[in-house]
Length: 220
Image (cartoon, rainbow, N blue to C red; front, side, top):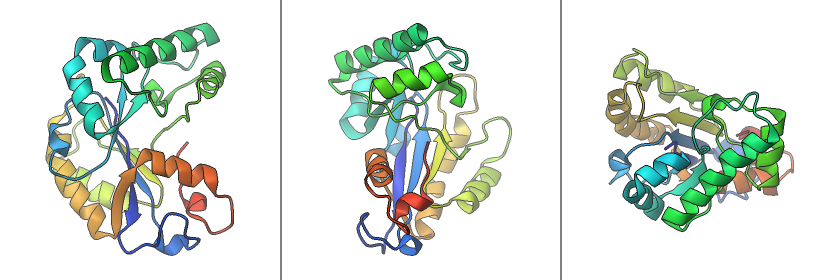
């Protein structure tokens, strides 16, 4: 499952404050897999679930839904860059049905596999009420060391950043397990705190005045 969370500076005013220099927002996203490494870290996250995986691992999906927000990651995880409207409708609708059947929760957003999506996919997602959520940097799970991942991502953190990590498939998942706790600590040391993706979406949707955090927190 992919997951997403957001951050505010711990000394900040509420999200409605119009002082972006002291209101920082960030997101954390992970891919389909167990939420074990988040236990005890007090991090709200959004797991973007693949529908067929939800049906295959219902107890895991239910456990995730108890503590975190849920997003739609399609039914079979195809590349959606050339998807037609019927294909996109099928992929998103089947996934949403599976997620609701198993967890009793509806997805709050859509993350396209590989970050790729066609115009038809965008129209279908919008029609279903899904914001399309991407990311601005991610764990390098193709050979970069844990230490290098940690240094790079803490340094790259910006207002509105969304961080992507996967803990499934053929990627090196151990680097995520090793780096995530010190990464959270390092980001918090910079004055951020994690908030839910839904809060980030509300901040972007509900305020358009100059100087609002929306100006510094593009997420789609």
